[in-house]
Amino acid sequence: MGRPHSKRIFGPVVSRRLGMSLGVDLVPMKTCSLSCIYCQIGRTPRTTVERRNFSDPEEVVAEVSAVLQSRSDIDYVTLSGSGEPTLEVGIGEIIRRLKNVSQTPVAILTNGAMFIYPEVREAVKEADLILPSLDAATEKVFQKVNRPHESLTLDMLVEGLEHLRREYTGAIWLEVMLVKGVNDDESHLHELARVVRKIRPDRVQLNTPVRPPAETDVQPLNQGELEAALRIFGPETEIIADVAPETRHVAATAAHEPVILALAERRPVTAEEVSAAAGIHLAETLKFLAALERAGKLRRTVHGGKTFYTAAGTAD
Image (cartoon, rainbow, N blue to C red):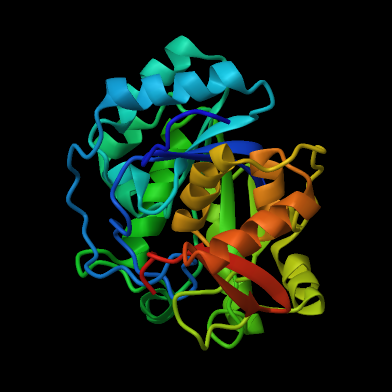
């Protein structure tokens, strides 16, 4: 736990889909092609489809390797975080280097919008798992829920995912984020299920906003509504459930602070998630979070009956 604070590496965190996931930020905060209304790290100030060299591949791989050498419980190295990772021009080289230094699978958590470009599909071909999103079946809903860059359309996103499925030999788990009153009416769900079948992902995972979202009026579906949607999407579909992580009886120390703050900078986190990521007992975690809140380093909010912590310097 004494490793230096990294602006790129965060976690590992307990992921609902990936187990113990070591997160890697390849692009600066909120560098994204979409500005989804449910995003847990807020609005995108200016959407972009411009790919650039944001990160040095050698430095990224060195930082990841250092963590992997100290942790044997990591299930995936996940290129994700606070922006769209496929906007990083060097993502292909980073994936190749990671595969050369470790047997830990590499996953990409992406909004899927950049797969319309052949060079992006080529760059990600060596990843073990790609987790794109699709939240709309009509352009009107796409504009409302995902608020894309002006050059992007829903047809482009779907076409890119279809190309990806034909060219990519790894696993694709497609996430569908359902927002109450926005993309959850029955007719839209049937149309969305039809589009999903065209893409042919290995898994379809239904989700709903459970963390504080970008827009305060965004509301989640309840369990019954999610189960009704599940019946429409069919047998290859699952509802993503929150993980109740196990924790170890380890006392919190000052060395845990940068790890905790790195998590809270990326997204709102619960005490249970911090406990699992830092490897400390939940009771110790709660005391440590309270101390960081008193010191003005964390903010505490309640959303959906759960308590979340965010870094005090994180933009709303």
